[in-house]
Image (cartoon, rainbow, N blue to C red):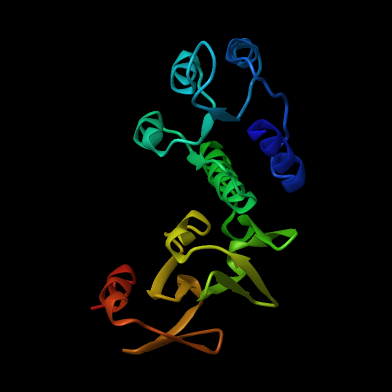
Length: 220
């Protein structure tokens, strides 16, 4: 069932080109040894060999996203430089976040980096998935269990936790200024003690975020 879910998510998202699936890890190893694959979704508990052991047999090693029902393997997975660690049952939005991490890592490996004004992310809003230019994002606003991405020409509502927001947008270009707001540094036009301006909009600055904000911007 878990394999079928990943297959469906791959087809639904159009972010990955699914080449093959395996229920027998030995056959998967044989395939990976002869084919160039960028990313593998890999369970941990499998017959004959565990996912952790399988990863260590591969050279060169593709990017790995572990899928498992057990949280206690998380530390081991990151020791193996896994891109992400998805706990079952896997939701589509969590799948998208993991794939975005992999895409970011893949771009970083390429010798021809994406130009800043061309860099994009994929975000899911209801049944739709949108490709959004990072350069067009003004700020992100939390409202209950949802986050609104404010763009230059429209807004997109997505179900996301503010604590995971820097899995979606790069922390180098965005800064959290309030428990409910993350703003694009390049679009800040004015800063006061308790608020700042982005595209003519007043954004509050929380007391706990004031000093980290000024430090990130190099202000005294």
